[in-house]
Image: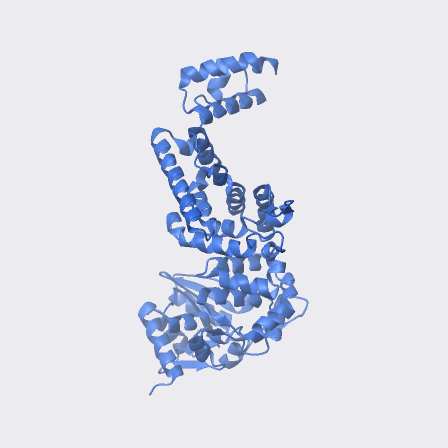
Amino acid sequence: MSTPREIARELATSTLLEKVPIASSLASLFSNAGFTLALVGGPVRDAILGRLGNDLDFTTNARPNETKKILKAWADSIWETGAVFGTIAGKKGDVTVEVTTYRSENYDPQSRKPEVNFGESIEGDLSRRDFTINCLALELTTTPPKFIDLFDGVDDLAKKLLRAPGDPDVLFGDDPLRMMRAARFASQLDFAVDPTIVESMKRMAERITIVSAERVHDELIKLLMSKSPRVGLTLMVETGLAAFVLPELPKLKLEVDEHHHHKDVYEHTLTVLEQAIALEDRLGGPNLVIRLAALLHDIGKPKTRELIPGGGVSFHHHEVVGSRMAKERLRALRFDNQTISDVSQLVFLHLRFHGYAGGEWTDSAVRRYVRDADGLLEHLHVLTRADCTTRNQRKASALAATYDSLETRIELLMQEEELNSIRPDLDGNAIMAILDIPASQIVGKAYNYLLELRLENGSLGEERAKEALLKWWDENGKKK
């Protein structure tokens, strides 16, 4: 009977050769040159789990210069940006590979950057890695391929357990970003996390502050775009890691006393995130902007919380405060300007529907809703629907029906008017010609006046718009 490791070797080998058969040609080149080559880490794990992609990590005893020569003969293109760390990358067809020389690392406790030393054995290379499920290797330059599992990673895969190969304090002390990787893997793989890791994360959480915002940004995106981001976010909050990475999230755990009961904003937020993910097909699939907006939509509540005399609590203008806070946090995490703008606008708009939740939507209100959402209308539809987390089925059904009605109204007006590009009936050039004035601030004021008329009444046509403009000019413009 085959052992778990033998089964894992067969699974990894067959998956690799089936999905990325050109890997064997790369292994042959290294073998012919007298070097070893092993698939290592995450790709081995994913091959065993049947989810291998086209990005492969290898390790070798060849030094970077030798690796470069071999990759030049194999790949369509190569790059050397990681050469100082022993890594040469290449691409052949749709397969990307990174080949890294065996290495060991020494860390300065006050620095996130390791001192890299090349190692002599794959065993030493594996022992420096983060979690047992990533300390796996498939040596391809032996016959048959040799499966290496020094820390019982296969058993942990079977148990769906994330465990450290050594002391977690040393693991996280060397590279604190590994704490976020723990949260990310828990989310991606839906694995339990060993209690020793959880306790170490609680002790070591503050060390994440020595890691660059760019690295934190990349890891946070991977977590958020995973299958179950709630799992990793919960781990980050419970261990205190979120207090240094995304402090707005744990602050949503607002105190609820016996006299002022209200919905748990933290749990509500995680539910909104899950419900938004369930609606992502409307956006074409997994969408970072909607996930960030769902996560941050209520972060203005702690700063705007007020107790109402006689019981209850209010959060007036939390969408305005939250929009500003979202911008600040996303900037600190080095998100790009477009993402920051889109997310903060969605946070600002997320309550707009509830101002008309009774169904009293005029054509003017619909136009303004579409205009303010601009290119984010479908995102706003998803966020607004996801934001309904009431357990009262009658209330939930009523809100859904009202929003269905709004979307129908939008579709009808879309057919009648160009709602996606609402503009006045007269542009700036026409305004200047009619009023016989040069470009100036008054032209902008006239444009905004005509835009308001357009939003309120729909298209007037050029003649009626001209009459309205001249009337406005007589009453306001000439005095300016």
